[in-house]
Length: 99
Image (tube, rainbow, N blue to C red):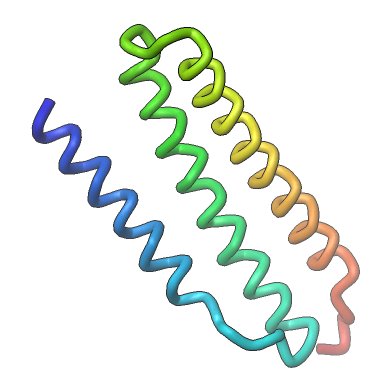
């Protein structure tokens, strides 16, 4: 259990580092915006994974409303990932072929 918790904490720290490394300024153009979307999608996927693992590990030990809240948080994180995936795909489909 201690090793699994350490792995989870390492994943959370990696996620925090990824989010902290996002640019603090607006993208200068479509290419930078696409890179930003890709980084956000990656962070969203990691967060969904962390929430899924937390739900799987703790669900039988939580009160029903807390378990439902954790499950809902996972679903929302998963939805965020899917929406960012769609946005990124839209960018690549509408990329100027001359670039």
